Structure formats: C-alpha cells, structure tokens
Amino acid sequence: MAFEYIDIEDPIFKATCRDRNEEDYVLVRSNDYANVPINLADWIPEPVCLSRRFERIAQTIKNMEVRPDDVWIVTYPKSGTTWTQELIWLVCNGLDYQTAKDVSIDARFPFIDLSGLRDLPEPVNPLRDALEMPSPRFIKSHLPPAFLPNELWTVQPKLVYVRRNPKSVAVSYYHHSVSLHCYNGTLEQFVRSMINDLVYYSPYHKHLIEYSELRYPNMLSLCFEGMKQNLAGAIREVCTFFNKSYTDEQIEQLANHLDFKQMRQNASVNRRQWIEYNLQQTKRTDKLNDNDMQFIRRGEADGWRKELSHELIEAVDRWTLETVPKDSKYAPLFY
Image (cartoon, rainbow, N blue to C red; front, side, top):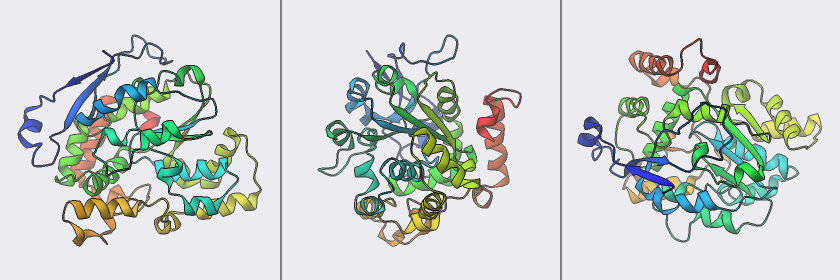
C-alpha cells in the first residue's frame, strides 16, 4: 500500500474543524520512498496534511511518466510559486510575452495536485492536462519528495524549489485559504493550525529540510526574500540553470514584467476567474474587490509585520526554534 490515510485525532481540531470548513483534512503517509535520493539517515517521511480527495490522484502522480525535458517547480504553498513559474516559463520560451499574456499560467504550467485538494468544475483537470501535454512540459506541485513520481529520481529533469520565511508564508497562506479553500477561521486560528502541522502540505519545516537534503544534480533552489532583494540576479541564476542567455536590457525588461504591480494586473497569472468562481459558489461576491481576496495580493517580503500580532510573531518564532534550533545547519532556511 503506497499511501496510508490517517484520521486527525487532535481533540481541538476534531471539535472545531467543521466551523473552519476543514472536515476533509486527513494525514497521508507515503510508504513508497525507497528511491528518493535524500541525505537523511534512517529517513522515514512524516505524514502530510492533505485532503481526503488526494486519494483520487495519489497513485496516478506516483506512477506518472517523467520526461527528460520536463521542468518541475515544487514549493511549500505561498512561497512565490506563481512569480517563479512566470519567470521560468518566459526564460525557457524565448521571452514570449505575447503567449504568456494570451495563455493562462495554469494552462502553461498545470498544478498536478489541485484536484486532490478540491472539487473542480468540468472540464478542469490539471493532472490530466499534464499527462497529455506535448513536450517540453512545465509542471507545478506542492508535494514533499516522498509523494512525487518515482521516475523523477531516475529521469532527473530540471527541478526548481522555492522557499519563503514562515511568517510571510503563514499570512499569505491564510488569505489564500480564505479565498480559494473557503476557510472560515481567523488569521490566528490558521497560524495556530500551521504551527500544529494541520494545514495543507504541512509539516512546513520538514518540507524545506527534505528538499534541502535531496541529492539531485539537476535542481535549483531559490529564496523568495532573495528574489525580492535582487530580482535581476535571480533571473540570471535561472538563465544559467536553463542554459539561456539574454542581454542586460532583456533581463531588465523581464524584471519589470515580474514586478508585483505588473503581476497584479496580469490576467494570465492572477487567477481572477478562480477567485470570482469561488466567491460566487460561496455567496461572498461582496468581497470581489477585497485586496486580501486577490491571488497575487502584495508580494511583500515582510508584510507579516503589519498583520501578525506580537503574540503570533512570538509563537511562530518559538515554533521554528523548537523545530530547528539556531545552531542547526538548517536554520538559514527559515530566516
């Protein structure tokens, strides 16, 4: 049995999950991880918080064909994924801004886990789209290593991983969950759930640590905060990874295209139709113009300072210190 599905027994979660619209949450353990090239002694992957719907696609992802010219991006949610997708796609496709404008990022770069989290309207099926796409394919996932296709580790296509500060992730993930996963709790409840590893794709720290310990020769690791500080430098790093060469002027043009003010106005990446669909389905159309309901919201490196209370900041910092002590070699991943 490649996957086990374990009910969440936390008494507070069980008593309150319906109020927050989390009844479908479940812990999923992968038992098929022997081929993952990870540098962790006696590694046994921890269960991951997902939806019961994941069972519909888990084995299909595990068994899917991987092609040498695939491009994969994997992140913990809300770590700069869409931003980096747009960057990668344009670098790999000759800076074809017209196609990037005309074709949505979801069509160019399908999110294969999505139907394992939520019911999708027909005919939307990103996993099917990825399986049927002509090469070269661009594929997005938030899954930890033990859940990815077995062929990934032998075929070894290009893989990009992006990480982000836990406090920024927590705030962005909360607003994302409200708008797209119909989450009904407060910001404080969401952050406490993240600390307890009870939001989709958690545990967060293990996600970053496992990818940092992959012995995978064809992987590029990026940091959201580093990209914010020096986007042109990150673009050049991506170009080098994909063996692409562009002029300084072209790199400056791409950096301008990737500016968050531009991204917010870019219909092909801001998933406005998904926000509208979800708010209509949940009778929240009064929030259609609420900034916090937008997929690309602010894209700030330290926006959490404006939204998290002092107590929550301390709680997240304490959680990270307890999980990853400051003298740990992994500490730089989280600061």
